[in-house]
Image (cartoon, rainbow, N blue to C red; front, side, top):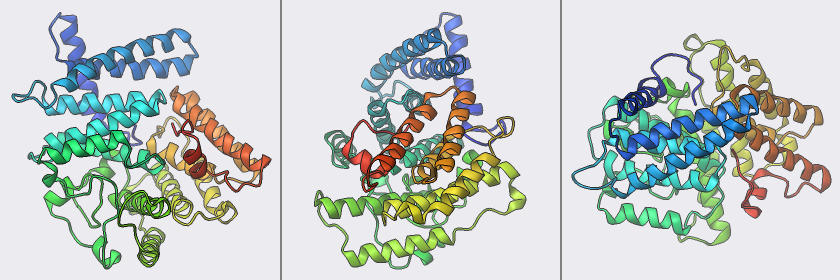
Length: 418
């Protein structure tokens, strides 16, 4: 979940202590609320799924499925009272429970449940989290949600106005609490006059904390992304902008929503974002160890690849040097004793591997995914590799026109990223 190896990550100070407290209470036959039970059984499910992959044991897979069903049962009960006044469960407990279910759904490669729990988590934050004074622990949890959400949205090609998303958006808007959000609820692109200038403006504490999906360019010095994930907020900000620009492109092509960008506006915004990506500064090397530096290099190159595929739909042959750079970085930081796999790794590997043309290059990515699956025990690595291999097959068998992850995800709802 994070490449950082210190003892102050959200999982060290929030998730695991919470699970241990639940275990102690259950051992003493104490009653727990549904939020605590959701987090407890969800944590057991993640562990069992990992052990199943590590040992290839059907027993652990069966146990993980059973724990997941227990977690889902308590999550459903938890959500029936999540917004009651007086509150039934503490905000942090409910957030830990929902985030745990996000991780369970991702690691078991259940895209429908992943979508649902991301939307539920967003609703909880917007209705109960943004209007409050945020403690450090609450901010850690908000960062955990947003970081994973960006990766999810980057490869989401479903309808932004789907019935489920429309329902969640309307429930937030009708609550009267949407006023606390500093970003739009639908991942649309915000207008700006000078992106370079706005990226250098300092955000207020309220704007920095309540711009949940980083719609507004700017600097927020209190960000926790570097501390939790080793990634500067400027990188996450640009990923958010590319996602939004890609959505505007889809809207203009499909005529699905009103007020699409004009070609002139789209072109000027694309050039501004491209310039910011190409000039994105790395953190000082003195602040990073060698392995974290390699991971960041992989993510920087992958962001560039993602931009050129998502916005310009550039031919893969023009991206090969960036693809090779990502592959080299992944292998340089593949030492399992130093750096653990995380969301940033699997995303960068997917974005780059999909564009790999050379057979030898493809095989090196394939080995990286297989080794990562073996080390982590998580099926998301194997499932993602299966999708990448399908793209490679389509490229070899056809003319390659539709053999991109973007087009395959658009035409086949079953094509998902782990």
